[in-house]
Image 1 (tube, rainbow, N blue to C red):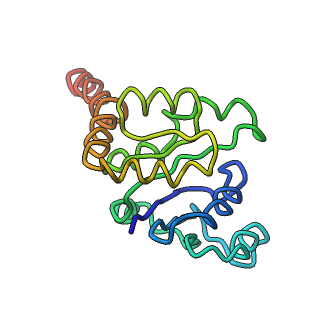
Image 2 (image 1 turned 90 degrees about the horizontal axis):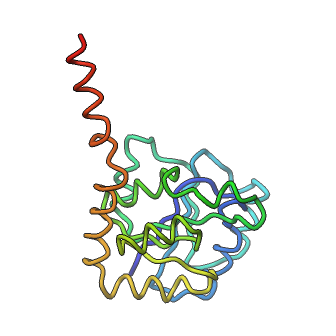
Amino acid sequence: QAIILHLGWIHDVMDSYNLSYSTLEWESNYQLILHERMKRSLYDPYIKRLSDLKSNSLHLSLNPVPYNELCKLIQSCDIGLVIYNTSSYGSSWENIAKASGKLADYLAFGKPVICSNLPDLRKLTSDYNCGLCYNDLSEIPSLISKILNNYHYYSENALKCFDEEFDFSKSFAPFLEFISRAR
């Protein structure tokens, strides 16, 4: 069984409904967890739409774990999803890679990613071979399978990508040294 995690906002900008709908066609051994960033209710109209799909592969996590425990949730998954619906929400979302907290979080724990096929996400996953991009949500199950068939490779590359592109301490250390010398 593979646990696929989508952290953050359950909303159309993350294509949450279409993603949830696509799980109706997933194999039963692929399970998607949509983990909301703030407390939500099953009676929230958007959440109810997702719940009403009755997908056996969809699980809604509507009580967010405290941020300092988010690592446990990420460690429990196999693959992280980074999905943005730019067609409805404008081009400002198209260059989101370095601004996507969830992307950095997945990579920090060696979790391969499946991403929207946006230029910067495509470049990052291609440059580091840390995940795959889709053109259509229906491709996600085959991408899951491809990653699982070579999981160690993608996981090691995820760690390398985090280390080279997102590890804040590497960039910040010279600044801290400068400050300490200036005192």
